[in-house]
Every structure is written in C-alpha cells, then in structure tokens.
Length: 139
Image (cartoon, rainbow, N blue to C red; front, side):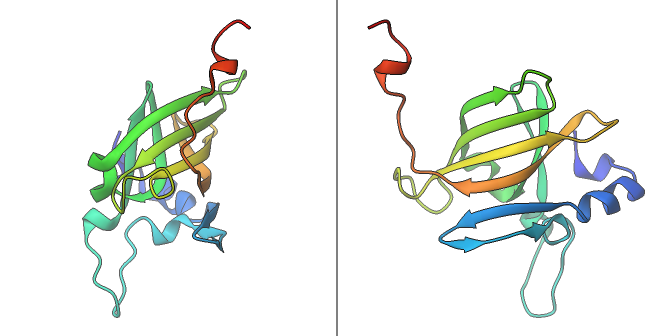
C-alpha cells in the first residue's frame, strides 16, 4: 500500500488525525498533516521526508516517520489486539544511532474503520530491553 494510492478525501481525513509522541522529552500531540505533503518556506522538505506505509507482519501501517528512515527500521515485536483493531509495535530505528538508548521506539496503531490499514496514534521512545528469560521459559 502507498500513501499516493489513497483517495484525496481519505488523505485529508488522515491529515487531521492526531498522534501523541514523547521523543526526547518533547510531547505531542501532532497532526499527520505534518507527516504527509507538508512543505515550508523555511525548511527544505522533499517526498523522502513524508511518511509512507510499512508492511509489518502482513499489515499496512502508517507510522509518523519519514520514508527515508525505512531502510533503518527493524521490527522487533508486533502484538495484535484480540479484536484485530490495534497493533502494538516495538521497533528499532538506527537513523540517528544504534544504541539501546537511541534506537528504540514503540507505537500503538489503530485500524482505520472501513479500510485495510493502521495509523499510529502513539509513537514513543523506548529503551530497547531484550526479553528476560522469565517471560519465555518455564521456571
């Protein structure tokens, strides 16, 4: 799925969706209008700065990050809700560093009604914590 494939009306509705963030102690919420097609007279933006869908475990997901970051993203865990309408995603983005304190993020994504994709409504820094054996083995 591609953002460019969305109808103009759906795209305008998506641009009004707010997502919350806590990145470097700066809190949101932000609107998707700044992630899709936003241009400024003061800052040089290109299409590579726009958000684009990622395919994550068979789901099309729009995260509020630039498409130029996609090659640096590794999905660590995806947890779907029981009803299939929410995904919790833990990921590593090495765009700005690769340490556990620099590259970890988690996102909560909600399925858009009547559509076959998810939008992030929370995108949060996360210290990459490897699963403890207590969660994966019998004691």
